[in-house]
Length: 182
Image (cartoon, rainbow, N blue to C red; front, side):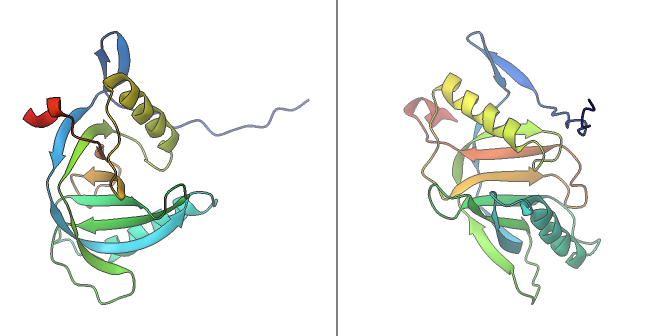
């Protein structure tokens, strides 16, 4: 009997913390400051096999339009299209006033949000299940609740030209009275 080989799973690097004896992914409760983003918008369906390649292809479309003078951070905003749907809108953008006269390019204002902020290394598209499990555990242990925002999460990179680096995930949560000092 032969055993089919499977690829080596991606190693997910993330800091952890202990909350009352429970181990969770390290987080910070913070305000996500409003930002105007210019970039590319598209829709993906997580139920299809090609969603990862579609996200990567559209991200590369924007990176190919940017020249070396555009430096700084970039954002990937995942927005739920419909409740209980596997379809998401993805916005890949930079906080500058770039103008690209091609289909799918946009400028949008992302509002201020109260968020749980996590730090990860590794391709989000490959570790999505880990993030979902970490986030669910965070909600349970911290007794926080997701916010009723159309934005599901925001991925933040320090350098638009280095998307293989560590990044932050901002997940909107409800602000509890005890969080008012944050």
